Structures are given as structure tokens and as C-alpha cells.
Image (tube, rainbow, N blue to C red; front, side, top):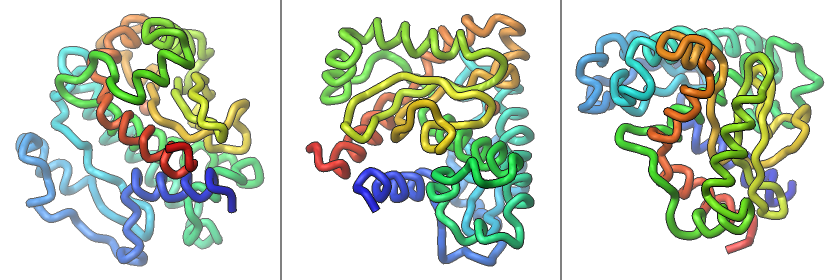
Length: 260
Ligand SMILES: [Fe+2]
């Protein structure tokens, strides 16, 4: 197993909060695990969030209205509680009774072309949304600092040029999909987009790497507030990015690639 593969597996397990001790159990989250700022949503979340086997439907890391005015409360409620939850449920159903139930999701992604399309769509929908929620926060935005900022400047010539390329990746993705900032196996940053619920970890990706930042450009991510104006949603997205989380992902990736 290469360092990149091993790291990707560990990183994904960390992001998804895989709890192997819960295999075979269905566990309600205790009330004290609900973040204080989610008081208004705690009852609803407790009914939504269950752990089934090794794959967890994690709680949203902030309140539904935390990203206002850039991403509205109703969009977040529906996006997380219905769309993301449906991907999770359908993923669980798609792998039920198969070898995939006990597999690492990275190994599923690495061989995604060999599995049914329902697995491809729903494993991606499950993973990508978990990843997306965590790279946003209330009072986010601004610019990255430190090593990540230096690397972005080096790779894209400037933050503004990176912002343009990432935004364009989202704007030009025909139909539905995702924009990504990722790290390749040579530790170079790159921007890409994927269709549907694909991601850079899948063997179907045009350019493969370890994802660091993603932006959902499905209409369900913005239509209620922005209607057909995807570019307005993309501009707003820059105000909610959690750069501290992205920097942690970057640092961890470099360390595990032996580049730090
Ligand atoms: Fe979505």
C-alpha cells in the first residue's frame, strides 16, 4: 500500500468519524453530543443521526442558520436532513449484504468503477457532503494563512487566481457536481471538478488526489436562495470557508506523504 493510499484511508476514516466499535449497532447520539449552538435543532437531529454499522451519518457541525446570510437555514435543513440523509440511507441499502459493508470507503472509491452505479452515486453523496459541511463554518471566509497560503501562491501564482480557478470549476461544471482543491501524490495542489457525486478519490476521476476543500454545485445546494444564479452562490461560498479545517487537512496530508 503506498503512502498516499494509506494516508487517504486514514484521513477518510478520520473525516467520516468511522467508529468501528459500533459495527453492528444502531446508536442514538446522546443529547450532550449535540453542540450547544444547535439547541434549536437538537430534537430533530437526534432523530436523524444514527450510526448504522461502520458508516456514520454525522451531525451537522453547526446550527442550520449558522451560515446565514450566505447559505440560508431552509436550504441547509433540506440539504442535510433530506438530501444527505437519503444518500446515506441509499448507500447503506446498496452495500447491505455485500463485502462493502466491512470495507474501508477508500477501497470502495479506488474500485468504484467495478461496483453498481447505486454504490458510486450514494457512497459519493454520503462522503462528499460530510466533507463539505466540515469545510464551512459561521464567520468563515477570508484567506488561508501559513503553509497552505504559501502553497496556494506557489501553485496558482496568487490567492485570487486560485479563487478564480476554483470558482470557474464550479461555474463550468455542466449539470450537477462538485469543485475541489486537492493534493496529488507529488504533493502538488490542483483544482478540479467532478460530475454527479464523484470525487477525486474515485478511480473514475480524471485527476486523482486527496481532497482538501470542496464546494457542492448541485442546484439543491443553492436554488431556494439563489434560484438559477449559481455564480452568486459560488461568490457567497467564499464567506463561509473554514480555512483552519482546510489547513489542518493540508498539513496532515503533507506529513503523511513525507513532505514535511
Ligand atoms: Fe448536495
